[in-house]
Image (tube, rainbow, N blue to C red; front, top):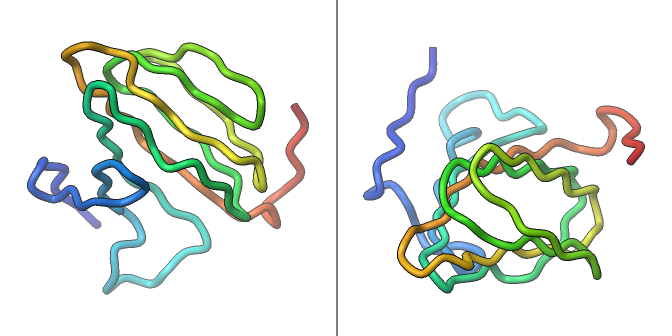
Length: 116
C-alpha cells in the first residue's frame, strides 16, 4: 500500500503553479506513468508546454479555461480533459476567488493508440 498526503504544504512550484507529484514520488519501483495534483490560484495560468506522454486533467474544484493547441474551452468541477501527446497546452483559472484544483494523470504513447 502506498499512501501520500495531499496537504497544501506538500505542493511545490512547478509549471508556473503549485504542483505535487503523487506517483512516482521516489523510493518505490518507478512506473512509466504517473499522477499529481495541481493548484492554480485565481487569475493564475500554467506555463504553456508539451510532452511525449498522453495526459488527462480531472478537474476537482474551481473554474477555468483549457487551451490545447488553438482550441480553447471552459472547464469546471467534474470535467475530464484529454491531452494527446505532443500537443501544446495550458490551463487558466478564470475565477475571482476560488482556486482551480485538478489531478494530472499521464502515460506513454506506447500503452496504446488514442483516437479522438
